[in-house]
Image 1 (cartoon, helix red, strand yellow):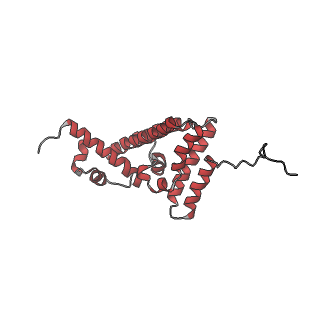
Image 2 (cartoon, rainbow, N blue to C red):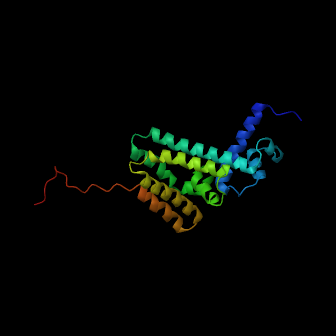
Image 3 (cartoon, helix red, strand yellow):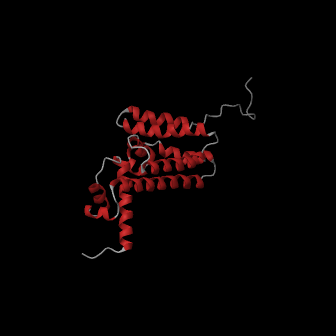
Length: 204
């Protein structure tokens, strides 16, 4: 059997990681097998250990990649926005959508990975990758706020919690209520202007 070139090997590794970032977010870090990942990548199961020492090593790299994509996406939306309110709308409005709730494989890695990370032993490579990703995400999220760090963290936790709970209760009206409640809290609707027009005639 011909030996795979270094270029092709690197390409295959990237394909495996991309497949894993989707599957791990969609079905959980422990909800898929290596066979599932390799099948999604269109590669044979036997080739896995030519790229990674273990499933945990793949999970760590997939976690890093998922955060890299998500954080870059948020930063790009901020850079394209003309002001803070516009940036908040661009990021938070789709975050609290039913589409994001129902498609975790393409969504936020924090809300997708958090349930599994609650059971991850401390001080593992995967936990460090997750914490690093969260810290970078917080740095990006802080650009949307004009408040102190404590208030920013509270809003961030509210945001992640809403999507996590909405997914856990999907199929019930409570799921939509979680999304609506936090969306309306973090993106309050502008109140209509009820002030009297100075140019309008004053009633007798």
